[in-house]
Length: 154
Image (cartoon, rainbow, N blue to C red):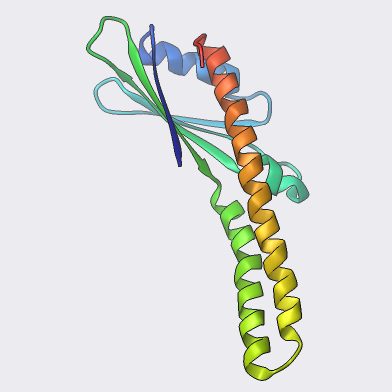
């Protein structure tokens, strides 16, 4: 989980309205907002994946944020965390676990199963590297989008 903190000269409700208007029903985003304690607002944003074949690339980052008033007048502290979607982690883990189990079964039984296990393990590691690389790109895209919407400098 990667965190991003900054301050905006506005109140939490106005910022939440801006985010909801920009991300609410357009661009394939899923935007959920909940009021918190002490005039704070929490929200979650993720890109909706309409094609299950592109799930690993499109729908892997969930943006969780909190908007809270600070002690300064008309200033809001924004805390945003970027996490990977659970199904992406599960998808990659299946290949790694199946590869490891096949290698263990192949070695213990003396069969050629360890070759297939090695292939599955290599595919799982390759997918993990690809997911990490795409995560960094997607996080930068989300940061740019949020910075543009809230009119801040990254």
